[in-house]
Structure formats: structure tokens, C-alpha cells
Image (cartoon, rainbow, N blue to C red):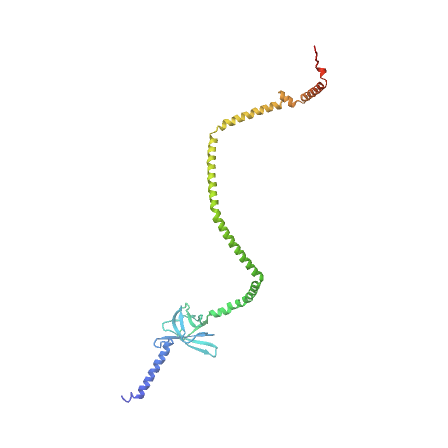
Length: 299
């Protein structure tokens, strides 16, 4: 018994145990638990950018396995990825293994399980696909748009430089500063004017309001007085006076009265005019020849 556990045997056992612990530790650091039962499946990809050994395999974000090995197949030119999945996981037929790359370039495999009552056998090949990454989307979609916009941006910057370098812009800014200064001065003056005159104006407005109120009261009294006046009798008297004036006017315009005949009869007017002319001639002759009409006798 002592010969069997000699010094050399002990050293060999120690080395083997150390190698086993080292192997188990390395796999454990990779995320591989040698004591956990797993099933192996395979997937083929055109490219595996960012995908490394021990990369996680997830379903809806939950890790269900690891990438155990990546091998390049020289016959087909594709990359075969060995997937180490939980033993209790069953993969439906037509499921897909998709390589997903994050913004940092780290890749992992996401399993898209199909709704199928049939399942892949252990060691079967799963359909592998590459998802378009964010940077590839930027390269394919955003960069061409940016390249198309760059000439326009260059022309805009050129026009902007021309506008900024135009002396008229400097003059406009100087004028704008002067206008701003004038507006500030006007604002100060307006503040002073409003502060000095507005109280007087308010007092005047108050006095005018008081006068208007007094006038309104007087008008109310006048209105009350007018309501108390005998408007109906006054209007009756006015109508009677108007009728009398109308009668007098009718008589004056008619031929039934002397005044009406005098105003309307042309013959009477001519006769009177002739009489006046005769009287005038008589007075003239009387002034020239008084002896003819007046006789003086002296006793």
C-alpha cells in the first residue's frame, strides 16, 4: 500500500487534480458549468461580427445558454456556431438564431422560437440570421443623407459668411443700436411726462366727471319741469294762433279786403300811382305859382 502511494503517485495525483481544477475554473470563468447538463445545437451564419465564445444566448432577454464554439467551414464558407443550451429547453422547428449587436459592438444570439408542435433533435442545425446593427443602419441610411445635405450646408455657410461680412450688416447693427438708445430715451421721457402730468389729468378728469354729473342732475330737473308743463294746452294755443295767421294771410292774399285789393288789384295800384303823380305835380305847381291858388286881400 505504501508502494502504491509513493511520492511520484502523489505528485501525479496532485497535478491531475490541479489540471482538473484549472480546467473547471477556466470554463467557469467563461460561464460554462461543467456539472450542469446541457444540449448542443448548431447554427450557420454568413458573418459573426462581435460574436465570441461564451457569448450569451437569450430568449426574450433571458439567458438560456452560451456560445460554446465558433468554427469556420472551409467547404461552405460559412461560420458554424455551437450553442450550449439548457437541457430542459426544447427548440421548435423553424425557430431562428439571430445575432444581435449592441451599440458597443458586442454581439449575442437571440432565439426566436416558432410556434410549432415539432421540436429539433439535440445536435440539429437551427436557422441562423444576422440582424442589421445600429452602426450598419447609420452607414446605409444616415450617411447617404448626410452626404447629400453637405453641399447644401456648404452653400448655406458660404451665403452666411457673405451676409456676415457685408458692411451693410454692420451699419444696420449700428443703426439698430442707435434706435434702441432713442427708444430708451423716449421711454424715460415718457415715464417722466406720465409721472408729472398724469395726476393732473386724472384730477381734471375727476372734475369733468363731477361737472357732467351736475349737468346730468340739472337736465333731470329740466326734464321733470318739462313733464309738469301744460304741453297739451300750449300746443292747442299754438295751433289756434297758427290758424288765425293762416286766415289773415288768406284775407291779405284775397280780393275781398281793401288790403287784399291794394296788393292784388293792378288797376287800383295804377290809379293810386296816377293820383300820387298828379298830387306831386300839383305841389310843384303850388310851390312855383302860389298866387294862383291863394289870394291875399288887404283891407
